[in-house]
Amino acid sequence: MNMTQRLSVLAAAASLSLFAAIPAQAETYDGVQGVTSARSAEEVRSEAYKAAAAPSQNVPRGSRGAEAFTPSADPAAVRAQAIATANAPDQNVSSGSRYNSRVVSTPAARTQAAGAQTPGTVTK
Image (cartoon, rainbow, N blue to C red):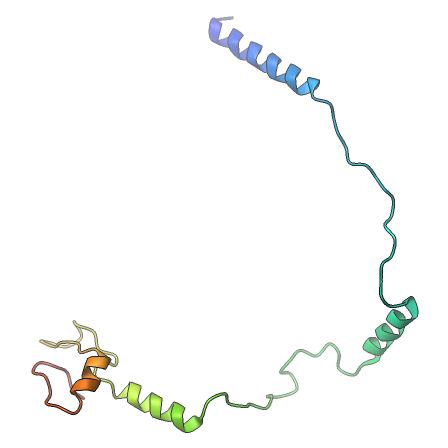
């Protein structure tokens, strides 16, 4: 055996002896824990029977048709916002999408809407 092999065997033996010197520890077993519930077994059982007898309990949501829709915003305001966004000068335009064009940001276009058109901007 050469020196490297001897050192590796010696290191392996030392690590195994250290591992064997550590005692094994286990958790203690305290038995089954007691039941802690605010309701009696009869109350739980009766609720289980009611749930099992309920009609269509396993039907996924939406399988009985569309649910009633209640909008969270005013439809007229949403429509006005959609029209303003669609008419914005930078809608669907990038700097390279048209020859010799310049993208104008929407806030800047709103301030210029009352004034003259800036030369070189894309209009619809």
